[in-house]
Length: 154
Image (cartoon, rainbow, N blue to C red; front, side):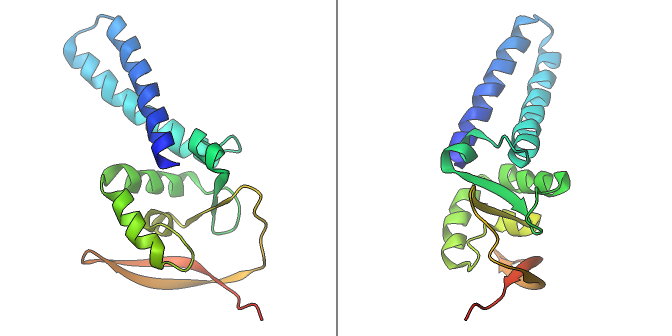
């Protein structure tokens, strides 16, 4: 899912970079435009498109969507935090592999921090849960995150 989305963003960025290079402007401005187009494409793709009903290419192929703690679309602020954590850590995928094995909600660390959940597209709520705070320690960093604690089903 993430690999497909990253590939799509890189392709879009190369198209934008090629279009910028056709303008024939100075090297400093071209470098600025390439950086600005990268940030713009990442924000448009991972923040706006991922939280919309259209979803990203990777989400469509995987048949998933991202939701907030209330079961609705996540806020733009949550998605900016989500994508910031995703883009700033190149080892994030390795951390996810180690993290997801032991997490009862199967929630990545970036999802915990952004208060989002990745669910199947056709998923329906099974009930209500209460909000709780959990403490996590990851690589000597301490996190206090808000989570939904599922009710016990008898």
